[in-house]
Every structure is written in structure tokens, then in C-alpha cells.
Length: 64
Image 1 (cartoon, rainbow, N blue to C red):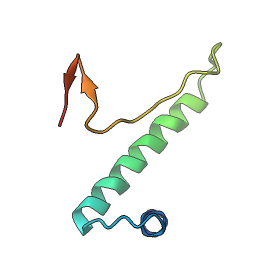
Image 2: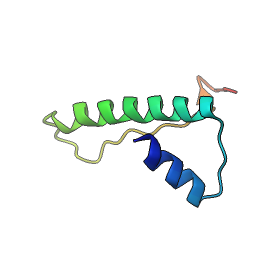
Image 3: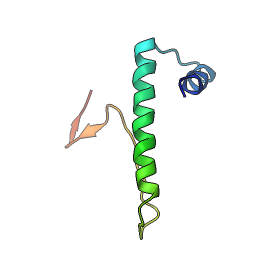
Image 4: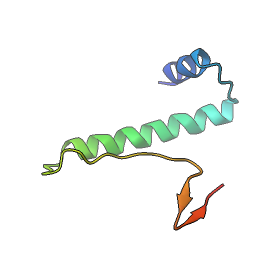
């Protein structure tokens, strides 16, 4: 998984440190676990999605 993350970032010209790469890999694994959990649920609304916005807005306040 790590090599695919590195490849995508390299193709986009994004350079990250080893620590940042580790964090990205952990976040990707967490998102995949959430995705697997949702795919097994019987939902009436198939248009529900999960998004991840690091540094977004939380309770009306900007998170840094």
C-alpha cells in the first residue's frame, strides 16, 4: 500500500516526509475500514458517502 501512495504523490509532484507518509498510510487504512463497514450495511439511501477533510471546519470553527 505504501508504494502505491508514494507513486500517486510522486506523479502529482508532492513530496512528503517519512512521518507524513506513515500518517497518510494510517488514514488510508482507516478510511478503507470505514468503507468496508458501509458496504456491508443494507441502506435504503445508496447516495450516502463519507468524505475526509483534514483541517476543515468543526462546529463552525476552522480547524488547523
